[in-house]
Image (cartoon, rainbow, N blue to C red):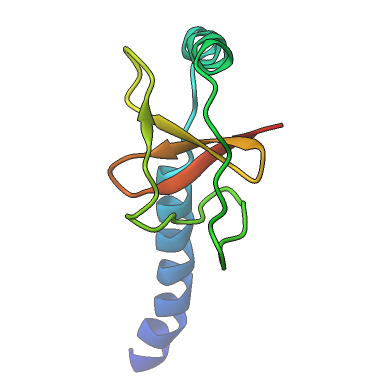
Length: 99
């Protein structure tokens, strides 16, 4: 019996990890994408530097980075190194990078 449990544990952890990764995927609806792109274009921000932070999806920005609101969208944005970055304000994690 012990053998079955120890063999099942890694499989369970693997499946649990897949569920967690899938839960973190954020899908932006096309309507929201349009609203975000248009708003960001009309409300340009000065680019800021954030030392020690690589711009990648899932990277958490420091709480000191000021995020700007996009009306009627739950996400916020900031311009870092001349790239507009969409951020989940509850986690401060980057969810999309616009060039």
